[in-house]
Amino acid sequence: MKEYIILQTVAPDYRAKLYSYIKKEFGDKFAVYAGLEYFEKTVKTDIGISGFKEIKNYFLFKRSFLIQGGMWQDVLKCHVLVIEMNPRIISNWIILTIRKILKKKTILWGYAWPRSGSRSKSDKLRKIMRYMGDSIIVYTRSQKQELVSAEPHLKINYAPNALYFKNEMNVNLIEKQDINNLIYVGRLTSSKKPRLLLEAFFKALPDLNKSVNLIFVGDGEEKKVWNSISLIISLKIG
Image (tube, rainbow, N blue to C red; front, side, top):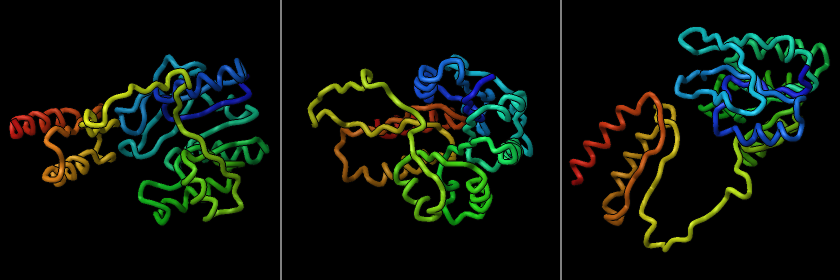
């Protein structure tokens, strides 16, 4: 049986090095349990991640809610469990309740607040989750500071949800005048609002050097739309 488990909706490739590092530290005592797709279908699991164990994701009400299966015995018995701080995952509520009764350590991992902010109505559910967990890990120092100010009684840490190893962090030195690209890297989905960046770029064009380019790098359900937009923009500018 695994002693340390991270239970996630998915285990995307950008977290591969983080999981690999933890796996090296804990060996066979550690595992990542995750399904293959996120609420947004474009976010998928990298099945080659070290320590990965596939479980089942059952989405409900047009993928608004989730129940996970195939991991119950392990996640209820393990010594330390890390789960998503997401109230839309129904199975996490059950896990939190049972582990609380069994006095097992459960850590909540995720954003400090919902997408709509700390005053969102859905944060009332997150607040209940935060009370039920033994400690919380948020993604940034600023998120930790905000949450500490709001709920100083909680045990809160922060850690990035992805990492690079030191030997991979190289920089190619170039002249400042050769830096002409504004680059968006991320999912091409409405929730990430790449169109807002495009609109801002067009408004700023009169004040920018003609050599400045806006480049989008990513994938998602809006990729076909963005390919069409890119073609139209190229024709207009050309």
